[in-house]
Picture 1 (spheres, one colour):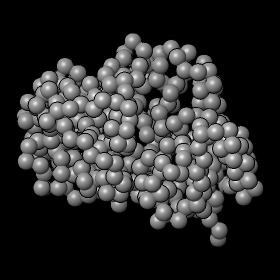
Picture 2 (cartoon, one colour):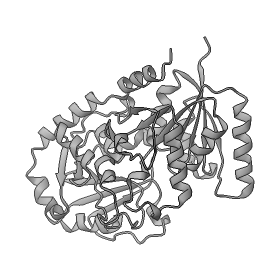
Picture 3 (cartoon, one colour):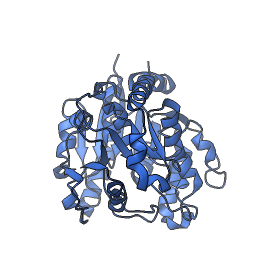
Picture 4 (cartoon, helix red, strand yellow):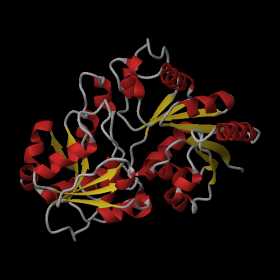
Length: 367
């Protein structure tokens, strides 16, 4: 029996996109449309080339010609008769466009973050962004998400009158990227940060480099693996003896590389005058999962409630407050590290992606 067809549109394919496709290819004939330049996607191509997924690249921000090519490709793909379409946000307009063109397909919406929850004053956002997100929530048949199971109960009626989509929680450790606990750690206790290092955003109390300085001031060693070369991001990196910058590497080998460090950093302190409490209740960084897969405990802050709840539930890391930053080194030295490693093992055993994919397939009613 022929497999059902899935069209996946993603602006910023990250490790979670790869993980999803790795399992979903067993159930779907998949086409992936990536909305970025092909020349900037060397690591992405390296990760995806073995999956057997058809992939197209378009850079809609590059020029008008690229936008026309994208629209033409979507219209052409519609003729293939896709059973499901999946749109992952970053920006919400690609998913909005996807749902409009493929109105007869089953629609899966993956709001990587719910931006309705981000600002107390929604007018900070362009009205188009608000409209696209509300439309996606309203019209989706299924909603993948990485927050608390009941997070869409927090959407107010004046924002979206009715959400018909079936929520599917998806916060899982990828079986193939789980590495054994590394016993050959660095000699001195060390921290690692993975991900982008953006300059200060108005939602954040500190820029990432300011946050790095506070960590370093406590006496800790910090290793940074950015998705882009730090020196090419237009920022002045912290220049200290106890911070080490590493070039981007493929997600396939990242976890093994960072397993030699003691803790993974997932800290973000927010501007509470601007940020909605709903965001703090629901947000969680994808790097939390990467650290668990790498077999290292996590350091999170208490104001990101969902992340802190997960760490406390499994005792797989440390929950700190902003006031704890100057004493971070002392706090780390007081921990029973072997107990935290047991918590890491328990967390990733209970959050295996192979189990969650089977649940997802049942909900999607794929036979």
